[in-house]
Length: 347
Ligand code: AMP
Ligand code: MG
Image (cartoon, rainbow, N blue to C red; front, side):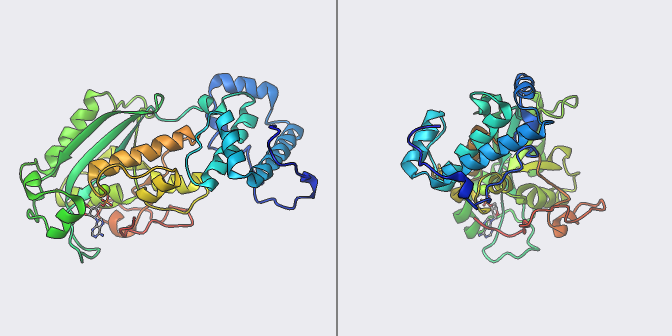
């Protein structure tokens, strides 16, 4: 432990808020690489309760210590471990604690690099749709922008993008409100293919990159900010276009949900998530492609901090009103999270 850290009589502490259930945590333990798992099993067997208790105690002590660090001490400790010093103080404290937890579990240096992600690629989608200023829940939104930002998970970089506008059929003229909100101009949708054609182009684009391997279900996952893109806009659009809902969009990674589960923050929109990470929104807010790039930036930060991204949302877990658009019988409210994703617009 670094000499710059405050000294503390740990035994007198009553603070157990950071007690951890580290052996149960899916977000690290089960995703260690094989090499690390072997090392870990020799050094810190999860079957050994004494070792577990010792590790738990060490971690509790470390967490208390981190809570007491000044911002300068915290950043010094982060730098020593080549971790980012960017972001709100609570995020930075969490980053250090999480790193130490991974270190204890894996029993080695550079533990975050040894965590295995589940998917090879993550495709971030952010639809823009027709809208009215006072449109209610029955408003028939049509998708007018379809962007995809493709992340190579192992390389932790954006490797490709798909972008197309879509021509709305039911209400072909965009409202002034919609153009002001999204920045999408009438001529851009007038010159675009209708949604069904764009969807076909998307699937061709994904196929050309071998991202639809039926053999390997771990090749690609889609990610969105919240449940609305797929549960509301895509489902509504498929209903309006009289086409089947795509199989590949039945489950996805809800980044907003994962962000609030991983970091000690409340669920919030793209801009606030970026601010929490010490970043600012790049480009025009409510432009589909800019939103998708910014969601991708958040996704990359989550992975760099050691968050293992898995499916955490699906078409049945979202609002019954939209699930009902699906002709199949659906099980509602499978979402057990305390905070439900209401189908409302929120930043
Ligand atoms: P966003 O991804 O936040 O840019 O929003 C996606 C779509 O939701 C937009 O293209 C609009 O159709 C709709 N939307 C977002 N915010 C509002 C709002 N304040 N009022 C009406 N519709 C909105
Ligand atoms: Mg958007």
